[in-house]
Length: 543
Image (cartoon, one colour):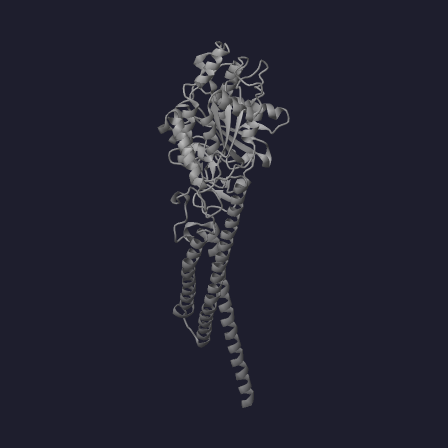
């Protein structure tokens, strides 16, 4: 009989122990599940909802940033969220575990009327379950936190690598377009390494200094107003191109919409006062239009200023009048886009006032020569005294002397070449197109040669007939390639530009690589001697 009671007692004790173990396990798992649920709610609150109860650190706001844009999530905000999760997670774990222990003590021990042995054993099992659950949840939450931190680190590194690849792709595209040193501002003539872009939203128009992939966006950037903008030039199609602006402090004016999207050609026109530079520039644009109409590359003016300026010049040419003198301050370049698609070229025609070349101290303002690979020198033959002697001998009294330039070509070239030497950077020597202007005024006088479409003939006429041999020699020493053209910036009765402008414009815009400039200190003394000869020739021209 005693053995039976012993067996019954053992069964009862085993049952009680099993119940106690189950109670401990269930309570521990319940606490772990509750803490995991709270952890998930904390993640959603910090990373998605961002309501005040989930904030312990001030968020990244665009008004606090040097750039008016939101940071990419994995370039700062992800670390901020991780920091918040650590702080709020520690508070959540301690508060949740403490609340469960206090609630259990209050319900099972302090407020129990008759806490018998069975209830005390049950309360003890629950306390042990809470302790086990708290002990199990802590390393589990730390593991989740470590995985979260590792994921943030890996995605951050991947984002940096992806941004670097996109920047490299953008640099390759710019290099293929010849824009590795930046785009050219048509207002201040400075190179802009990377323009600032305005927000596409009309009511915002905040300017963003560098929108390339980085901390403020990988593929898209989000402005402080919430508008999205592309970070790569290759993502800007013609319909969604952002308004670009010069980044130089003294300028800040808008650039062409095609800046950065097309290969740029800077074509400065150098010449004295009233040499015919402005009319020649208008005639060149008309020649490009005529070539486009006869199967040549498509041409369109790049901005509203160029459209309005070209319209006035075209009307003057149609009336066979003469343009007014270019303003002495730096005028805005006339810009046109040649071609379509990948073959687009953005051409800047710079026409500076002749006063800049007449006085040597003024030529420092001609900063655009640093970007030029072809320079146009407008040579007015009426500014040479020998021309009037030839006209007198050939009965050329019909030519109006007031149409002649007041600056000698050799003086103008000497001042301009000195400015190019001061402002130009070492590299390939530019080409020179010598445009002998106003040949329409000399036509029929017997002064011009019989053939007007040959460079050698024009060179011989300048050296032998006008006595400009020193000037021609200085040009050929200073520039890598020199070509001479007889030009007439006039139109016929049908509004067609003179035929001499077509080959002249084509040569100025063709992609012939200029001859490389030899540098001093490369093993021989030829470059320094060449520079000495050029300086002596320039001094001779000035005197």
